[in-house]
Length: 496
Image 1: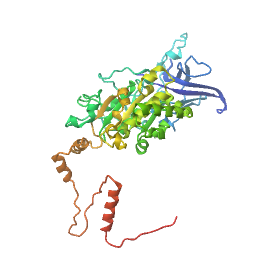
Image 2 (image 1 turned 135 degrees about the vertical axis):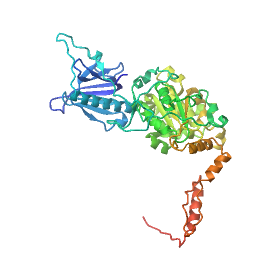
Image 3 (image 1 turned 90 degrees about the vertical axis):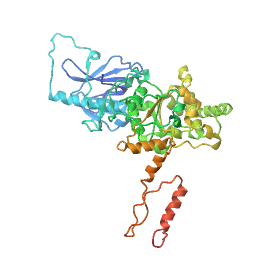
Image 4 (image 1 turned 60 degrees about the vertical axis):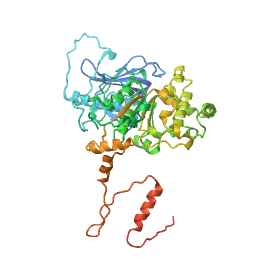
């Protein structure tokens, strides 16, 4: 296992006044590693990649000894940080780095340096031995990780969360795609995941599973198999992934873990609604596309109307080069609450991505979404998309022709974390989620009803909150309860 990062780097070497920049080197893509020399001194090694984009081509690795260390991590969640080496007057500014990997790298570097100061270990070096090339120096080993990852979340200093290693299972190949090279095989900063509990699945005909050709049906039945880690492994391989599951199965938590493994500048985190986007710290699909109004055009997506819509799209893109640049820069697209994304909108989103990336290469035209890797979360048993009545027969995203082109690897999360301490309630909710309500479920729900009868002291008992599907029903119920209160109804008016 190596301790290295692939990211963008700016190196500033300062003058003696600690302010004036004597030399500045910007590398669009490079590899940063923490290594040791013959004297066990820690160094930061920076190796430019082929497409580093440096005007003065830097071919050799650069090394900076770490004696004192100052870290600036205000924008760590955005994949940015600055490493200051005051002894050598050097600033190393890191950007476009997977946030979780950057957090782990900095924590390891600080801990190793602290250990080096308290335990000075030097191996004897022959006086006539030639210096070792910096590219051949031994890399630091990552910090030891907890042996038991199947435990409750803990807080381990100096981290804000537990560290668990991604272990590839036999069912999943450990070969990553070229563009995911920066994701393999460093540790994942994540909360430990407990083993998946077996759960009764009920009638499989009531599930959306029959629509998925590549459904991983045997995942939930395998003992001790980690469903969440399987999703991450597929993402690291460069596969298009669709992760589904009922409420409380950890989809939102898993989104944050996946986003923490991806480079921020090449990743878009979106959702079908504003509230869902706010939870995961992203944008709505309409806002990110840059063509929100065009996405909601009333044109049907048949052959003739698609050609008309594409002409409108090309005309719009001619005057919006920023939208084209945004889509060309994108490598990973994360979408949450896919159930509320209509078939028409999903198809148009794929057409926009393909059109914007058409000039990049021929392969982009042949692949769905122009070669962008999709990571989609949602549950089609939850809220459906709002569509015109004429499109009700073909409204879900999986009914789009673009869905089949994506060739998703589908994983269903089956363990309910929200009701982990109440398996009976979890089973009840899973049955109702699939549109079933057997007699035993009705009896169990009715047994929890709260009576509104008065007691001996003529005081009302606890009145349960009533949930309504429509605002008009809620207003009518509130007015009814207000009218039952004793006293006179008063109206207050104010002038602003």
